[in-house]
Image (cartoon, rainbow over all chains, first blue to last red; front, top):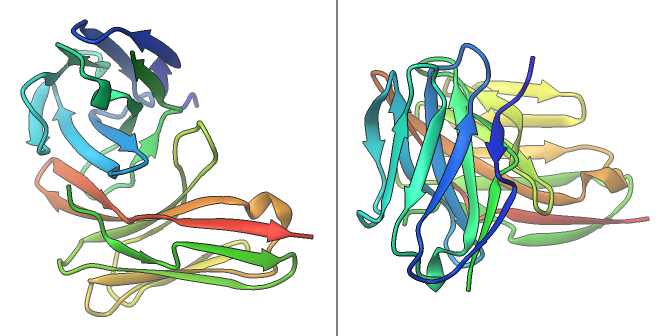
Length: 112
Length: 113
């Protein structure tokens, strides 16, 4: 059974640009969550999607948005990139309520 | 953002030694999870705990869900070099179909021969 797949693995963008990251969950999983990991703040929750609807949101500015498609694949978008957005962005999928989350390898975003 | 208190922050141990780390929170969680993360990779799930007081093992790893639901610990017995990495606890709170992980600050483990 394939794990959580995130693309691309690495990305370099310039300040002010926007970026879209993609996540394919484990087959059969309908919940996808996104996390940002930085050395200073650790792992922070961005948002969660279930059945194409955002179910939960962390404390991030509106520049961070996401969506989920009918096949449960999810995308995360960051607009007007800032240097501080440089981070490892992780996607996790779950099979249902009260089940454990499995993570992808992450996308390393560098903003220059 | 919120992070759980995880200790120790880092530890150097010798191969064969046992390791203990713990995580505390001011809030109650439904589930406690322990992950290991290697550099540049995503966290890999080690153990999941679902009930207060639950003690669960996975090979050389043992973890417990605290009775108060506000803490958890992880033990690694007879450490080996491949145990090197960063260990994170995570508390999960479920409300219907929504769920959110709150992570600990991490324990960096280094094992010497």
